[in-house]
Every structure is written in structure tokens, then in C-alpha cells.
Amino acid sequence: MNGDVWPAELIVSASGIRGRVGECMTPEVACAFAAAFGSFVQERGWGNRIALARDSRVSGPVLASAVSAGLQATGCDVLDLGLVPTPTALFALARHGLAGGIVVTASHNPVDWNALKLAGPDGAFLNPREAAAFLEYARDGRRRWAGWSALGARREVGEAVDLHLRAILGIPYLDVDLIRSAHLTVVVDCVRGAAGVIIPRLLDNLGCEVVGIDLQPDGRFPRDPEPVPANLGALVRAVREAHADLGMAFDPDGDRLALVSNRGVAIGEDYTLALAARLVLGHRRGPVVTNFSTSRLMDDACEEAGVVLYRTPVGEANVAARIREVDAVVGGEGNGGVILPEVHYTRDGPLGAALILQLIAETGAPLSEIVAWYPRYAIVKERLPRAAADLEAVCASLVACFPGAEADRQDGLRLDWRERRSWVHVRPSATEPILRIVAEAPTREEADALVAEMRRALARLASDH
Image (cartoon, rainbow, N blue to C red; front, top):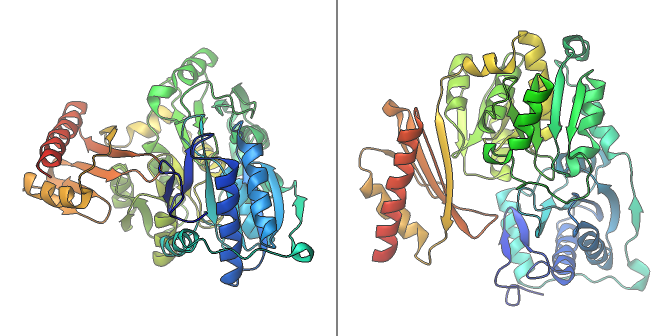
């Protein structure tokens, strides 16, 4: 299968290969891309031992079997890590010194989606340059099929969660005894995803009393899997009923963490990275990296600490690559994804949870009070169908529609009004056939107005083009 015969609806990008199961994401597609990846990895000289993991989606076992078949058929040996969070899989990949990995997960996408996410030997997703090289390789239909005597083997490896837990608990400034002495009650919503296999164990190690919501990793998501405030009603109610210290919500593959305060308020996933960065910067001084769609909270946290903040195009691989480039001490994305390079270069929900608990224990303050230390912003995230018009041309024209803004064209278009402490970012999604608009301002009314203004400008320009 080459680029000429990929299903039209399949989303193929640096963020992976994803689509609706039974429509464009089929075992045939999964096997073909896995075979391309196995061939690509070997041709680059990375080796032939590949990690395979999946989240809890119902379609996971079928697609994982197809992936394994594709890898083995090209002579790759498969280390099957089973059902584990994505960060757990990537940590194990690096620890075992493997050539690469494939995680079968559609992350925050709805239950009928699934995807293949590809990692290199460093235990991080392929960087933009590597991803572009692989996609060109796959489009050409190049494969290295192995003969009968050179087929790869598949072996189950069950220690990934233990390895990941030890690494988190071994962070030098994570004071396990201090957290235990705080006797925190935490309500956890794992949305029946992969985080359910590690989060209860992590919190038990940290002496927390755990109230669980949908911990069973069976893939029957009871809510929209994206951990945004609109989807966390059950968690908010449970925090209030339990008089808990905080609530934690994860996405299906466990790389994103959203928080609910002790007052039962969903504070927004942008706070996860800001609070984790505050904790890390109290122990490590150095640059911080995030993307163009992340809140100004990160600017405030870095200004307070006196360190430099770098921004990159949206995407974990872009952020991780810049973290390496500038030797950052912490980074991540405003969707609740924290990257701590001391552990590894991937968004890590369990790690983020530990850092937040350390912050609460260190400060002795409830989460609601810690949040109040920051300026308040309203962030609005909307989506609209991707127009047929040339988005590059539209974004170039948009700059003229907002003459008072500072414009950045590295990732769609970000317009910034620093004196107003406001910005808006429009970009094509790499994971869905949509445009994303994110706006932030000191008030909800101002943020809504920015989104509405952007919508009107896009509609005008799309009709012109």
C-alpha cells in the first residue's frame, strides 16, 4: 500500500496515522504502515527490535495484532508491552534500548477512532524531520519483506509500568515522605483508558486516598475522552461529594492530565503545565518550551522565575525537539501534557500528577489557592470544518485583517496583542479534519470576541479564495 491508495479519509501526518475504525483505519492499513515502519527503521540502521503498545480502545487488540504482523513480516522482533499508557510505553522503549516503537492509540479522539503513533530509538515520537522522511518512504510503497527464515518474533514484556513508576518516584526533588505526610484525597477519572493501569498504583505509593471514577481500562469511554472542563462534570461532582483535595482527569492513553480544584472547579488543562513548571523551576533553573496554543500562564510562570520561554508549532514532537535544542528543564503543551526531560522526552500524565502533588505538599496550600496566585485569563478553544481554500493564502491575508497584532506564521497564524495580554491562534489540526481556533484574553467576553472576529475574517477570506 503506497500513498496512491491510502483511504482518502485517513489522516496521515507527523502526529501519526489515524482514522475511524472499519472505515479508513483497518487491519490492512495498520499492517501496511507497520511494515513500512519496520522497513524504514532497519534501513536507517536503528535496529530491528520494536516496542508495541496500545491503549484500552476496543479496536486495540485487533489493530495491534495487525501491526505486529507487519513488523514481523519485515524481520522485526516485537516486544509487546500490552495495554499501557503511551508515556509508559515510550519510557520502556528507551530503557530497553529498542530501535523504535508503535503505540496503537487515538489519544483524545472519540471511541470510534484509532491510530498508530510512531517513536524512534530515543523513546520520543519521531521528530518532524524523521516523520517527514518516514511518510515519504511509506508513500513510495517501499517494503523489506523477510523470507521465511528471517521473520521476526513477538514476545510479551510485562514490566513497563514498574519501570515507569520507579522513574517517577525517583525524581530527585519528588519528596515521597512529604507527599505522604499531606494525606491527600484525590478523585481520579481515567475515562476507562490506559491510565487506569498505573495511576492508582502511583497514588498509593504517594500515600493518597484514591476515589476512582471509571478506572477499568475497557475502552468503553463514558464521556467525551478529551479532558476539557466541559467533559468533567462527573469528576467535579465527585470532588465536591468526597471533600477531596483535588481531582485528576486523564485522556485514554494517559499523556494528558486536567485538574479539578479542592473547591470542585475544573480549572482548565492549561494550568497543569503552568503548575508543573512552577514546581520544576523551584528546583531547576533553565529554559522552558511550550507551543503557540498554550496559555499566557506560561509567560507569567517564566517571568516570575526569570527564565526564557520558547514557543514551537503545536505537536509533542515539535516541543520535544526544541526542549533538546535549548536544553530546557521542563516543557509541554497546554492540553495537559507535561514533558520532564530528566525522565524522558514525551508528554506524561502520571509524571504530571506526581509533580502537582509535590507542589501542593511543598507549598502547604490548597490547589484553589495556588491557582489564585496566577493572573486570570479566559481561554476559548473552538473548531470548524477545514475549508477547501488554500489555508496558507488565507493566513497570509488574515495578517492584513488585524493590523495591530504581532503575527507569527510558523504554525498556521498566531496573532498577539501583548499590551492587551490577548492572542488568537488558528491552525489546521494534525489529528482531525478541522481548523482549530484558540483565543485567550483577560475576560471571557474578550476571548469570545476574538474568536468571533477570527471566524468572520476566515469566512470572508474563504469565499474570496
